[in-house]
Length: 426
Ligand SMILES: [Zn+2]
Image (tube, rainbow, N blue to C red; front, side):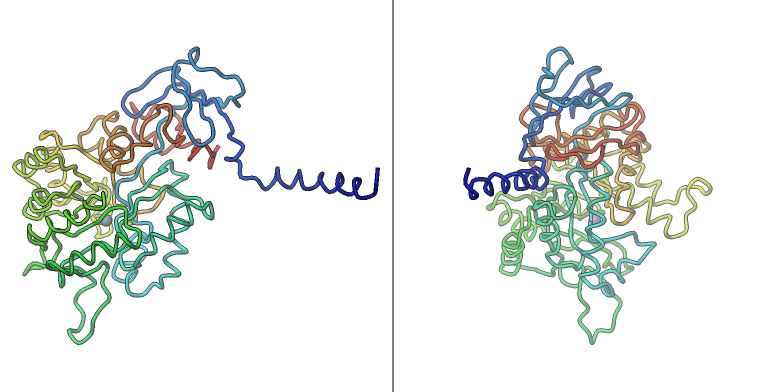
């Protein structure tokens, strides 16, 4: 044996171990057999079923005796329910709770570097809370920073959920905020102002070019004579935005809380209406007819009311909350598709399940809420590769203590989080 061959052999040993150490676990195509008490597959529950994961995909789902365990690491999840990775329908990873810092100050006084640094922490908290996907509905003054955040997560630089981003969002000139400043200065806004034919076409295409997965518009905002919410864009403007976005295969989501703002968003072709606080039975019937989904954001209104001084549990519910209960019930009665999205960022990231608990409190069955947060959100957001436990879909899985199909608050008891076949919490 020459000295060179000996050297070559010795050299190989540390290299081999280094390769083992440095290799990301997903490239090993690790196989797991997850054995919980029951699964919720995105639509219904099955006692005693198991899920087999290979690499980043679900390989098989079924009763324990129908799914082979060979070659798989068995993960026992005793006393737990396995559900598809939850999908947050309305987040703002670049915002933090308004009782910490008012929205105006976040937009005007916080450097984008600070906001992004904070957002990386929000992303991790979201993932560890079992939300493996978020539809992030606007950077609120942080330009296109959601695009970089999404890239950092996708490249494995930071842990976080899969993101659908809308970048800056679109507002009618003069309608949004921060407002109330001297007319002599131009105050940076929380979204991009664009109106009329050419400017709207350009703004939609620019946001798409920069990485928007969907377009968000504010169909109404608090710019009425008495600072009340009033419609912003005309129906023609909304139709134009939808037409331009649709050419690229993207949907449009509308913030709307007034009946008229909602009506314009619905007939204009938006896919989801966010908030919908002042909807009416007629408006909800129109939503049902057009197939427009409602993302009710119950937790945001609940949080804001408390920030304004309401002592929940000790004082009667404010009118705003009472009205929200009524209109949410009207939407359910009309058979409107209900997304699950809390407007998290207004309240703490990682507390996303607060919305789902409130949906039950406001009249939905736990099973329907779980459907909203998984298969329904996936369908409405065009995410055919997730939202269900089914062979071939992404291995985004969450195990919680107890049975959230009966007690929705069990979603706060997350024990295991897997995204793309990798454990982030175990
Ligand atoms: Zn929002």
